[in-house]
Amino acid sequence: MRAIAVGAFRADPELVQLPKPEPQAGEVRVRIAYAALNPSDWQSARGAPDEGATPQVFPLVVGADFAGHVDMIGSGHNRFRVGDLVFGRVARPSPSGGGSYCDYVSVPQDSAVTAVPPGLSLRAAAALPSAGMAAAQLLETVALRGHETLLLIGAAGGVGSYLTQLASARGIRVIAVVRGDEHRRMAELGAAVTIDTTVRPLDAAVRESCADGVDAVVDLVSTAPDTFAERAAPVRRGGVAVTTRGVAAGAALPAGVTGIDFRLEPSPVLLDVLAAGAAEGVLRVPVDAELPLENAPQALDRNRTGGARGKTVIVL
Image (tube, rainbow, N blue to C red; front, side, top):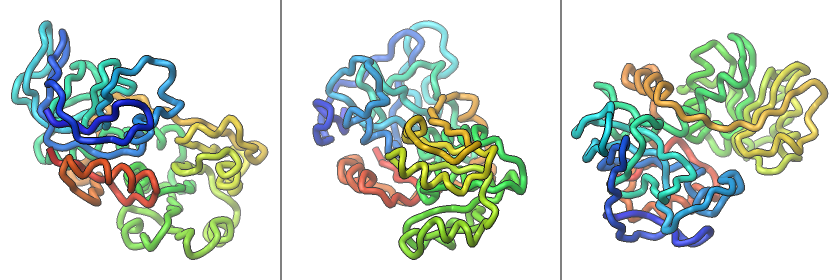
């Protein structure tokens, strides 16, 4: 089968030919129709620290999110049948080196994989798992009520686009921080205010929009504790500052502000909830680009340099 893989950490991803995976007991093999790009894809390929000490098998197939149909079922009880349309997320780190930038993947039937509901395309389903689940769990982490204010750093990407929608649907006032002219798109997703940091400094713009501070910040971008602390400066006492980049522990946050390092906990139940919302049109799936498998390495490079808008899906 075709796959985008690396032969070692920090090696360049490339198109290779690999054997089809054979589903083990309790697994399903999925013929992938679409995969979706996430920042964690290139981070895993580079051997990011949050991968822990689990031994990794090479070649390592890049990617986690997928949608397709069940092609084969392993032995034992299984909740799926051949031909079922499914979508989900490959666990990382994968002991087998499996990923989603490939024609076939085998995953445990009790992992973060579920059926695609009627009304949801495979293309849209592939763009939901990592970013959608992260957005939903981030919203629960900040625990804001209606009319409270969320400062969202990096709002234009996949996670930010979903989180803006989910938060605004609860009546939370979202201040979306982006790079570039994203005002119209973010307003359509539910942002009350959009701040373009290429035009004006963040601190001044936040003070103008919310003079008495914000109730929480979710920072999807900052990779240094000092930068995260600066972004959290507008948070009022009793509020929370959440980072997806693992830098909360070393950040000197304002007095009375709780810092949280977010970690995704994938769940098939949560996938069902997100898929239902997308199928009903309540949750928009912001696909920004679609490209063939052979162009995935270049897309990973672009994502690493920043400036993502919505989701990129890979066609197989």
